[in-house]
Image (cartoon, rainbow, N blue to C red; front, side, top):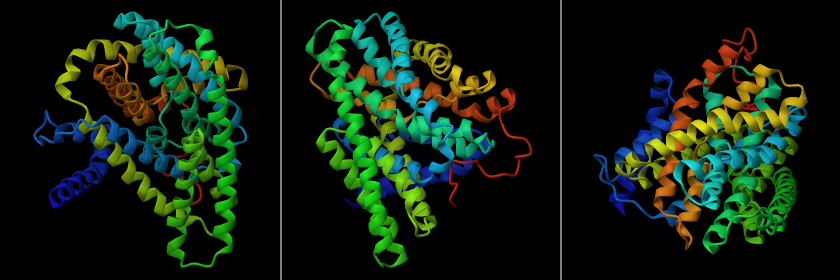
Amino acid sequence: MEQSLLLASLLVFMGFLMIPISHRLGAPILLLVLIGGMLAGEDGPGQVQFSNFSAAYQVGGVALAVILFAGGLETNLRELRGARLPATLLATVGVVLTAAVAGLAATWILDVPLAIGLLLGAVVASTDAAATFLLIQQSRIGLPSRLQNTLTLESGLNDPMAIFLTIALTTLVNSGDDFALSSLGNFVPLLLLQIGLGVLMGVAGGLTITKLLDRLELSEGLYPPMALAGSMSVFAGTDLLGGSGFLAIYLCGLVISARLQRPVKRILHFNEGLQWLSQIVLFLMLGLLVTPSALIGMLPAGLAIAAVLIFIARPIAVLSCIAPLGFRVREQTFISWVGLRGAVPIYLAIFPVITPGPVTAEFFNIVFVIVVASLLLQGSTVGLAARILRVARKNNAHEPPAASINVRQ
């Protein structure tokens, strides 16, 4: 146990040390942590053997729940009025369109059955909350509130649709049936259950936790862990009932942040630290899980699919969803560019691998290549894209990040 604890704590400590390095290099911290995990793995100097996809899936779910809860807490519900409709459209219709375009491209590039190609498209269709929250915060570009809130709210809301498509298409692939739109129609009750229970449990749980926190007289240091424990119970309970636990815990954080009468600053600081810890643990674990030598053969196909995703699928989805909603062309272009992929696609890619079916670890490796390409290309150019497209607010060089990130601090 001592050896495992020493190794794990050193890896996480080194992950935190990479934060100032990422600022100096202008590289996304999550990408550096991911590379750190790969170097610690079986093909790197660390020689750590880790190939337990099932354990990674379980731990990854808990880490993502913590990240989403912190993201909900940091989002100011009052600032979201102009962002709710575009973010909801991007999180639903946008995910479907992205999955369809990327999936058709994957089918042709990989020469696989249509169902498997669409499954890959579904896995990479959602933007990643961890990457979006962190990189917008890290870039300090001072985006207009509506633009920034649309990006952050979309990344918090789009997981249920991606999960629904992943589960439905994995079931279809494992059954051996040919793909048909009518087949997906059979899973619509699952989608309604996921979203309906997620919204109901998230809002109800957030209101209940808020009332308890306001009424109980405890030491100030006890409110943050109590809020997290209550929200994690909402996440787990929603999952057990068949709803989207990720949507529920994100909404739970939103409600607590908006309705809590006690000073929320201590809760924000506590969960900000846990959010960082969860992100570093998650990306280190995913870096350990992948075998770098197995990625070489996947590079051409993975990069080709990533190019379609970044330059074709995401822009089509954004244009289709928000063009009529008053966004300028340069803002639509920026939203298209900041369709960051991160831990969620890699996490979702584990699901078809651990289920009994034809999907192998090569599927996971291709998704890994796509995510790294997105973080490397899009993640490192968020600030540059904002300046080129002139979407950043004027006179903001010394301002903190706007609106939805840490607005209560």
